[in-house]
Image (cartoon, rainbow over all chains, first blue to last red; front, side, top):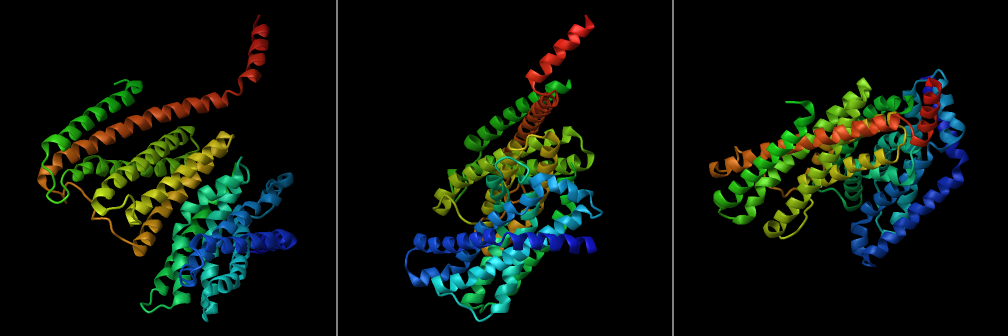
Length: 221
Length: 235
């Protein structure tokens, strides 16, 4: 547990020290939200209807930049090999990195919510529930994303490979998060929010367990 | 039967059965009451669907064995099963679109089975792309096996999430759910496609294993001077 805490502290510190890059990714996500409106047109009702989808597409696109860079420091000067020599399991290193990435993505998502509210007039008063969905969705993107980032950071064409591998896999996260966010914005007369939240929870449990088991294999060779 | 003749025998048997089953389905079996001749695509569409899923399930098994046994044979089989499974899944989407246009009025619909198949194509196609960008054969084997396990585990979640989202596809066709007049062409084509798939996977796995041996031998310019000096030493 202390190894996990130490590795998490290291990863959060890395995110903090590269905050200029975090700000650039936020700018990318916000500009993506701006551009989506040009694809649909200036119809306020249509924009409001699709606001949840735009928010999550913006976060998904931004997540590839955050995730692709998450192993950058470890790959420089072969630091990952040094980390694996420490008395900490590879699983602890994975969970620390995945938690740090999930928190970074959740912060990014929470930061994009006001942009969505301003651009698409899609406000909700259920702020804690919305932040919970953002956290669950970010965790769903982070678990497989961190594992794939560990692989693709050592491969050629890593910027292309990561989204190619990640996007089809996170279709359930996108569906669950978009539906849950839309229900929070437009109201939930049929009580469907619970089902979509459950889908996100199931995805997170399966992928956090499976990816944690497989990470050791990815870095051992 | 000699092992090297096995894939060719499977291919020949598969093609013969497919020709026979397709002839039966196209010319001898009666047309369906409501859809007419459009329904006849079922004789290739349903066997393609079954065998695509079978190939990707075999890929999942190969991925697990490759991860735990570390034997390059299973990596070669994984590569072969992935390629054949993705090809069959692409064919499945194309056949589905050809059937959907006259039946549903659109080439594509966001139905659970269609969407799940499309997601499968991209998920497993991405693993084939990953294999192209990793030079180290050991890392390539491990990473593609890990990615295949995760992608396969994701399939049921994708299916149920899309099912909640939208559903239009008719219930699954099998010899038990269709009229007796349609049984035989469907069964013959299903076995034909199975033998064809087995032959293709066997041949492709053999090619992948030969390529792996070639990679392990090292690049030719480096190997040549060594061979030359060894020959000089022998003299």
